[in-house]
Length: 468
Image 1 (cartoon, helix red, strand yellow):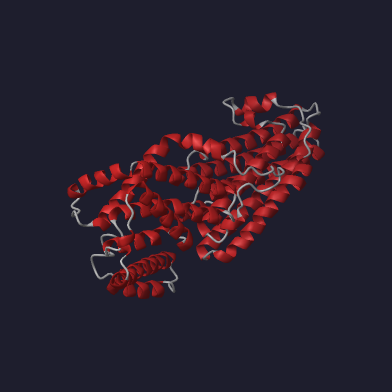
Image 2 (image 1 turned 90 degrees about the vertical axis):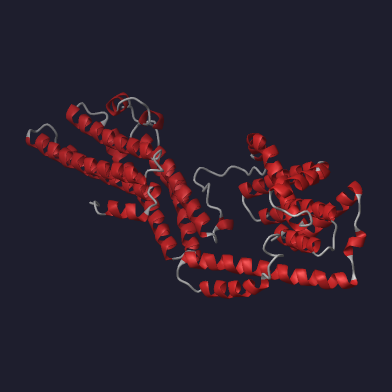
């Protein structure tokens, strides 16, 4: 604003920017609409600067505000108050700074008073953040408090060192090519210096600030079946809505993982341990007292319902590409829920045949558990490869083929056991059904992993070529 808004006739460029910005709003491309919004915003800012500059020139003819200049720290505090109040009323520190710059450039206010007004604008903008956070979630409110702390600390330091900072600006200005009488650019340099100084002072204490902020706005903990990340206040912001929905679907996966592990009589700590898969399955053979159906009804299904509701409501604010992502996340959530239903059926026979003396049946059920542990470990491993989506997809596709081959081999092995009369037909049908359930669980989990941890559409299309 100091360099362009006051030194050239910016109003000549403002109107064309507004016109092209409005035209771009009718484009089908999101990027063009976004660039159009930028042009409209800049156009109004520059047009406003031009009007304010002309207004202050006219005002100066009848009323010289410079005659009300105040020296010393009394003037500093009075003008800080004026700057803060102006920012609260206007609800924009940028607009307040534009007014200060134009008033300073037209000689309506003294330089030192303009510096005080700039500090006041920084302090006053905290009220804007606080008002915006009233309708936000807990983290939004915490961020507003952090914003308040940062600006207040910066403001206090700037007040205490205002004359020293003014001298620093005077020494730095010639080095940066700023003329001695270019007070608008000096004000911009002062504004930059004291904000950078605030960053330098606050940065070492960010960790402590985070710990303090996390003690604020604590809500009563919800039940295990409720959403953690779905924030309705940001639903109209496509990127935020999609990010929240993706995180909540991962939350659903983690919650379902607990039910799947316990239904197989395993602990998650064992599944993701360094021990071999065979060793983990062999040592965990006693049935766990867990009601998968209750967990499904009271927790999984409840959370799934919240995800579907949020996804459906978010679609009204998304374009075609966003709606496609919503559809994929809904599909992932549905597949996760279906895996819990499948493992619920698998658990019944797993626990029933755990009491049999037939080692062939026990070995085959252990092979099913080995298969599921292998898939879960694979997914756990790819979650740490978020920056290499091609490698993630490669590992997923490799595991899909391995799971498919395991299913074929196990069915062939069951046929062999039937022909040799090593298992009765009743047990054979149970095993065949459970092999199908295990294959279905593996396929759905791997498909969910591709949706949740592969975001590049071109890479996703490569995976779709190998669907079975």
